[in-house]
Image (cartoon, rainbow, N blue to C red; front, side, top):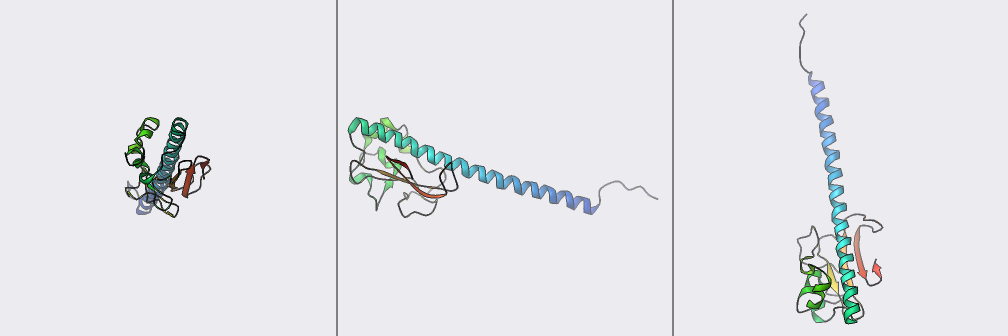
Length: 158
């Protein structure tokens, strides 16, 4: 009787299947963590801008508004708040506002009230001085916020 060394074909297939299963579980967990991280950044970005808008309001007794600041039907990208068309006076209150964009979307179209996807950038609308709306969308659940479109106003995030 010969003593054979090595693994049988069945043993190799079982090991390969286990490695494949573990790799699949790791990829799913990593994608979930990435989604959560992007959503946390979105909420943090919006809260940072809200804080800056409130400081601006305390200084100017109004929020940035006007033709360059968007309307409910046609919001502008949040980064537009740093331009002369809207309100460059907001820049000292929100560091880097000209560079605040959605962490994953390369789309330059701002989110609006009808946006139902994640493929948009933060949107800002302020048709009148005492009110503003920031539109954004979450990929998954982040804290107490469900996936999907959201708005932020001076009253908070809805």
